[in-house]
Amino acid sequence: MTLSPDLPRPDHAERRDRLREALLEQEVPGVVVTSSVNVRWLTGFSGTNGQLLVLPGAVLLVTDDRYEERARSEAPDVDVATERDWAALVVERCADAGLDEVGFESDGLTHAQGEDLAEALDDRGIDAVALRDLVQDLREVKDAAELGLLAAACAITDEAFTALLAHVVPGRTERELRRILLRTMEDLGAEGPAFDPIVAGGPHSAIPHHHAGDRPLARGDLLKIDFGARVEGYHADMTRTVSLGPVADDELGRVHDIVREAQSAGVAAATAGAAVSAVDAACRDVITAAGYGERFLHGTGHGVGLEIHEAPWVSREAAGSLAAGTVITVEPGVYLPGRGGVRIEDTVAVTADGPARRLTTAPRELLRL
Image 1 (cartoon, helix red, strand yellow):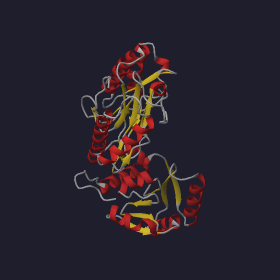
Image 2: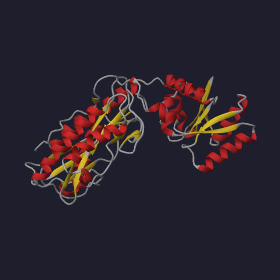
Image 3: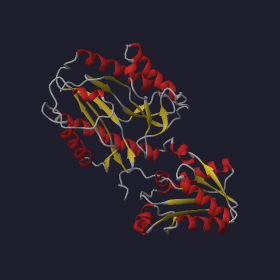
Image 4: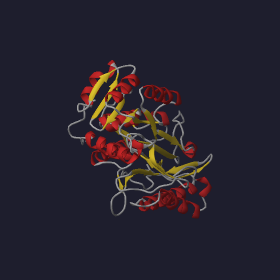
């Protein structure tokens, strides 16, 4: 995949340098990276079969013959080898480098694969050091290129939402709107959807993760739309809840106002240094005070980047705090079984000072179509 010339270009070498600095702190000289997402973040290679060996003075990307041309195109600044038995090649390179130990992603391999790799390294007198979340922790704070790609994905998402509204009419089915949404995002330049869109009308809007079906929309329905575009591997995530004319259920109209207030409170709380649990509490307190605390059925949000769901997690139980450059969703919701539900969600970037910046900017007030 060739990066469009008008999109920001990631500095993969700088990312690998950051990884080496993290390895120094762990006192481990090198690492075998096996997560395809982490390999892409470190090299640009987007194939589904790739393993990366990062050493102090060298980096080797191992793939197979299917992906050789792509690997050399997408990762031109690393050595590329095609070898089905990647572990044997990695062990050989570690031995050639004179290593007495090397790290590996314990969460990027099955237990059996990890055991096999450790045994092969041990046969050459090399200790295998299990490392967890090493690259994921680095990915949590987005660099300038990532923020640009996320902003591009969110801009397409906003534009697709606006285009979809013309098709939201009584008689149209959820499944039809889903198809229109998918086609519109690609027509606007997305490489595809960030995930399978949730299009939920009427009582189906009370189901947080409803699968679009053939129920026709009716006047007075709420329609919940949760979707996002994907650009160069980076994901957007946005939810809006609209109505087809005046809302038939007055309580649901009031619920929309409550959820909108809660979402604004959550975004305001998403500042550098804030505990992720505090962002959740900011949303949850508004909803609980209004009497709907038990109908807020999920966490407030999650990180977004090369994965649609990644660290940090924003919930009551989550630990940790937000750093400038972190990108999360803020998505409170209230769901009344059999009647309807409301969720309002934005992808937001935490700034060094001041409030988070909304990357998705479509109107959050209740649009009556």
